[in-house]
Amino acid sequence: MDVALKIWRFDPESGERVLKDYEVEAPEWACLLDVLDIVKDKVDGTLAYRKSCRMMICGSCGMRMDGAAVLACKERMKPIVDAGHVPVISPMGNLPVLKDLVVDMDPFWAKMRHMKPWLEPGYADPGEKENIVSQDQVEVIHKEALCINCGCCVSECNSMESDPEFFGPAALAKGMRFVGDARDAETAERLERYSDYHGIWDCTRCYFCTERCPKGVDPRDAIAKLGAEAMRHGIDRDMGAKHAKWFVKSAETTGWLRETELVPKTQGVVASIKQIKFAMSLARHGKVPPPFPPHVAKDVGEARALHDLVRQQNRQGAAGIVQGEKAIAHIEFHEGGEPEKGPASRVDPTKAGGKSGGD
Ligand code: SF4
Ligand code: SF4
Ligand code: FES
Image 1: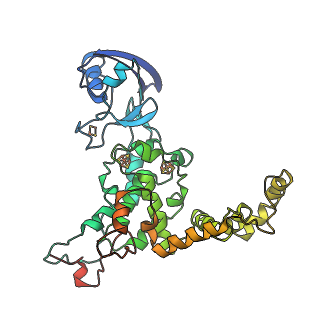
Image 2: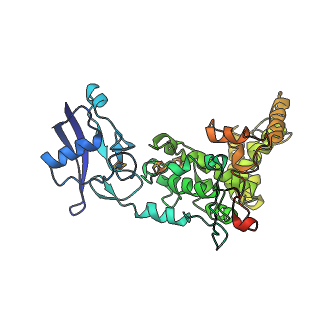
Image 3: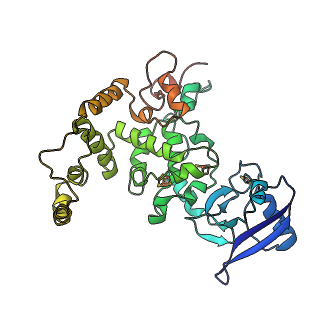
């Protein structure tokens, strides 16, 4: 088949950036990476891109096709050719471009390292027996453990565009991979670290990371679980956490989002006083309802009943984040009937030599 492509080329020496057209003959089974190889072999040997495994495992070949991040070794070209489309290939976003389709991954790795992406089991002596983790415990972090560090989620992250220091979806998903690990003994320390500026609460919930992740890691879900776990551990100093708590409280009490009280409840009294002029201006333009008496929804009973129902289920922390995922459903209905109290039953390092027991 004849494959036509447009590729954004970047020359770091001249600083020149140009969109170039290519047309090559490729077999019908070719993926984008195969086509790039043909271009490099037969048309222009200076074309730069990364690759290694060719089978969606190493995470090297992340790039953008028509403005959205993809793994080049995953994208089949035949349907695109059949549709008569000429895709535009460019480097991933939110990372500095080194040459053509190659980006600098150093900022990505720095954020990964900040997550302390290794197990802290809380004991020095591993003992003689293996550390058994149950299937239920593994499923809590099943999705997060699938990450191949490709950076496709980071490329599309809305929050990172406005704040390059934001930890980002890949690093935070890695964080959840360890917060949810039943063998890890530094859950609270990790949650403190991840709740800092540029952390959990700076996510705008745009879901682009989840949409573009080629491995189904669902980073936004991981971030939601981190937020819920932080709350469960009483780590709620961030305005984002206070914001979320007020949403719940105001829905429970009035069946309504009391936005006029959102600023004092999340930013405090001093910040609210500073905002009075702005608030008055909004009020003059009819943009805010009067705060007193608080508006109570007609069917507030339903909101309260729903709140009670969720409370009775006692799904604390990550177990309360339900986005239709199999792992959470599995926790709720696991053998024995009682819901888990957290993302997993914790290993108590003070007991049984820190082992999860069973052999
Ligand atoms: S949901 Fe959050 S982490 Fe994911 S892309 Fe959007 S802002 Fe970034
Ligand atoms: S979460 Fe998905 S998109 Fe992000 S680095 Fe991991 S595998 Fe790639
Ligand atoms: S080359 Fe390894 S993921 Fe594409």
